[in-house]
Length: 214
Ligand SMILES: *[C@@H]1O[C@H](CO)[C@@H](O)[C@H](O)[C@H]1NC(C)=O
Ligand SMILES: *[C@@H]1O[C@H](CO)[C@@H](O)[C@H](O)[C@H]1NC(C)=O
Image 1 (tube, helix red, strand yellow):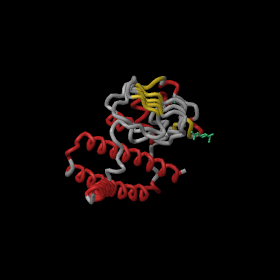
Image 2: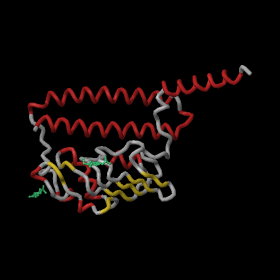
Image 3: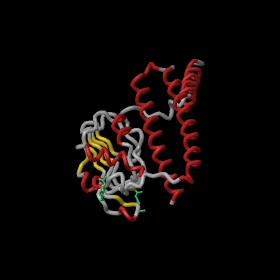
Image 4: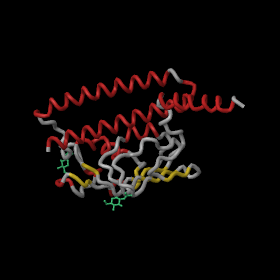
């Protein structure tokens, strides 16, 4: 009779170890992030009208159709999104609050050549005022004020130091993941998600620097 509590104690210890190693927080691949509705059969993920300011990082890898309409996305790291979602064919981005500054340059150049974005010509800038209602695909780098004023050079350096620390952390996590290869698929997703979060973070830093200038 004493074996049942010992078994549950061992299970609890295992769970604790997983949480300590950070696995407890990792979502299972294929599960649906909270603000979204997912259909694996239709390969469709809808994260619509949720006032999201960033793309949820744990989108299921089967995603072929992605709806992100009616949110508050200011920018998007398209390269990171595509490496995370290899099956992505169609993405809807309408009714968001795109900020047409330097941080959106990658999105604009991707939009110009991609045929994956539903009605890309209808995507409009919401900010800054001088760019309001201008189509994203019609902006060019001379519109997207990408020059960095001299007085924020030191701030930039600070953020590079911060970026260095983040990269070192990611490296440490990567090494940790390497030591636990037995579930390599899950590890690849975790790694891709970490990269995606990092790029989202860089975009946010870009925003903060912009806010400090103005
Ligand atoms: C989004 O923001 C609007 C305006 O602030 C609010 O009315 C609406 O309830 C929000 N929607 C969600 C899903 O939080
Ligand atoms: C950028 O667009 C503006 C109009 O919005 C145009 O006057 C300018 O020539 C364009 N610059 C380049 C490099 O295409």
